[in-house]
Amino acid sequence: MSKNYRILDLLRRGRTPLENHLIDGLVDGRISRREFVRHGSLLGLSLPLLGRIGMAAGFGAAPSLARAAGAAGATIRVGSSVPAAAIDPVTIADAGGLLVMQQVAEFLCIDGPDLVLKPALAESWKPNADGTVWTFALRKGVKFHSGGEMKAEDVIASIDRLADPANSSNALSVFTGILQKGNTKKVDDYTVEFHLDAPNGNFPYMLSSDNYNAVIIPASYKGGYEQSFDGTGPFKLEKYTPKVGASFVRNDDYWGDKALPDRTEFTFFTDIQPQILALQGGQIDIINQMPVLAGVAVLNDPNVDIISLKSSAHQQLHMHCDEGPTKDARVRRAIALCLDREKLAAGLMKGRSALGNDSPFAAVYPSTDTSVPQRKQDIAQAKQLMEAAGLAQGFKMTLTTERYLEIPEYAQLIQNWVKEIGIELELNILDQGAYYGDAVFGKSNWLDSAMGITDYGHRGVPNVYLAAPLKSDGTWNAAHFKNKDYDQLAASYIGALDLEAQKADAGKIQKLLLEETPVVFGYFYDYLTATAKGVAGVQPTAMSQLFLEKASKG
Image 1 (cartoon, helix red, strand yellow):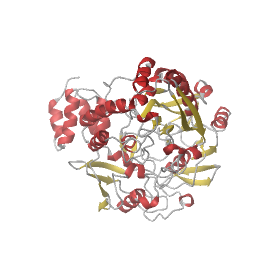
Image 2 (cartoon, one colour; image 1 turned 90 degrees about the horizontal axis):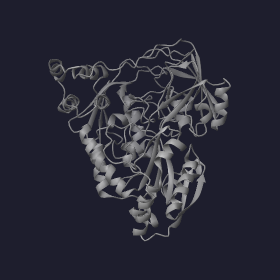
Image 3 (cartoon, one colour; image 1 turned 45 degrees about the vertical axis):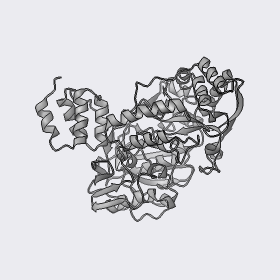
Image 4 (cartoon, one colour; image 1 turned 180 degrees about the horizontal axis):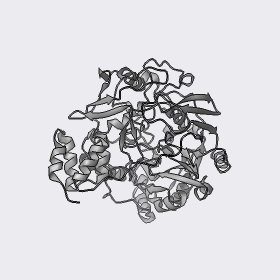
């Protein structure tokens, strides 16, 4: 299609310089349509407007995401992991717990599988000129299950709880250095401003389903969430039994389209194999997350459908940068060069992953610089680096990690590969509780181990990965990596509002991390959800959430 400059000029009117620069990037071919839609949604441009601009720029109509509605009235049965602790929006940190909470409580916006932000409790949002203040317009007429209308005070209280260090909030990994308690301001009943510590070009993701703690609950909340499960969502609690399961029923007062299912039921399991048997035996309809190795039989079962989402989820191999043999960056690069990433993707992950290139910039991110060469296995170069570091004879070291998903097998592969350059790794594989400990330095095998592998769940933007495990003052900096150039580049990327500026910083970060290699990113794994044949309309996210309001059974 040809470009319609008359329509483009009309659509540009009233747009900010930042928005018009994004439109220029699409028209000139500097950014793709996918990048345009994703970044435009981040800046608060509506999806219909982005579609009209795309058509005027010569890209034709956007593909429809609409699905035919299934039959109403089903009971949808889900198998999931057992919540690890009491369910509380402030502290919840595990997949089983956040899945249950998300059934009743909602976010200001939703981060979809395509990383495009969609309005939910907020109808729109926009930054000021430098990205230090973001203004959100709230949806009117939204009712909590307890009866009150959601207004600005509820949003302010919900986010202040998460930003308050005194609350031991799990979301402090997101908000520390970005948003402080007291800096969420009311403009009017349906408008809220977020005054940030520094410019942040990706901030709406911090308030979306990407930050799973950031659900909006009443300002009056004082704790004891399991007694109320109060929220604004399309389902409301019927029954919750800790360690056993939960059930929900349709919320007929929901602000949006009413849910198709009459009920949803969640059964908690301590292991994946009983979930597989329950799915194959017809006791449940959905397994929320299906590991690759443990679920090989299900992945090839003709009676099961697999929903596969590309994600940024990964397992970081960290190495101490300030002591021991890995203090030398040449040794860290040598270890990284031992990995056969193609075999990891095809063998360990059965083709359900993308190659990692030793930085947080996964292929799913529009800001990733794809021109940076992919690191490949090179044992000869690894041996040269070991010799240059004075360690040609190798050394012994302990690799500590968690028993979760494919990590133990990943650790064994690394153990075998590094033998070729003389490194003898002793594996110390712990249950998750012992591995994470108190999750603070001095009280955590994760953060205190000289070498370790840690699972990191999906995020729609790389900000948390860039900050918490890699910045000099990062709360999860298990590698003890301290590099001023990196810190400045990460701050520049995080502060950039413009996609092309983000890409420029991303390329520099990717090259720096290939040189320093404090952390090895071997692969980014797909998020897999299994459903019985005939179950339709299920929308998982790679954050372990499961949206069931459009679910049906054939």
